[in-house]
Image 1 (tube, rainbow, N blue to C red):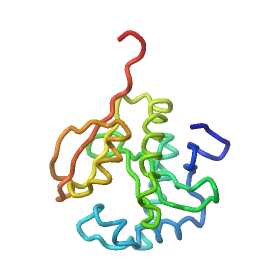
Image 2: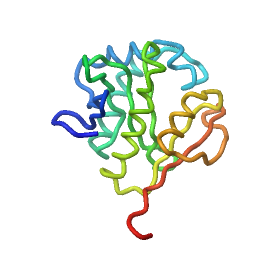
Image 3: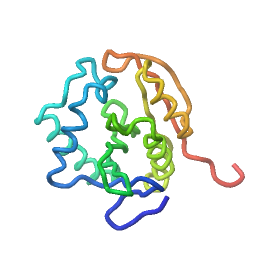
Length: 178
């Protein structure tokens, strides 16, 4: 993993970048797929134009306030948009939450795991927080595997927004002889 000007994070195959004007079309396309939205809400509905604009504004505000956000996820070989990944602050607890959504045609290539692993490492470099959380729908076994591959530990199962989820946590690694 290395950083480059203009990128928040670069891995072997991915670039995570902040959003730019005109990226509404990318987010709209990603979240117009019911399979991508399947585990995000009970409605499973495509995101409206209003929701896309609101989410992009929220991600920009998070970036400004925290230096963390959900980033545009690009494949490095051709700069093709494959999804979004990053952190948002949970309003209920103030904790940072790792999340990602990958376009269906790119599922099964290890992109979510690669992004999650790199983001987990980067989080502790850029944040003074001692932990972050993530959650996956109880039926989304693939996403649960991604979180486990990233080194997150299962904490509990329970409801979130009236849906069944599994909750995970990663703590800051201890340094030296502790």
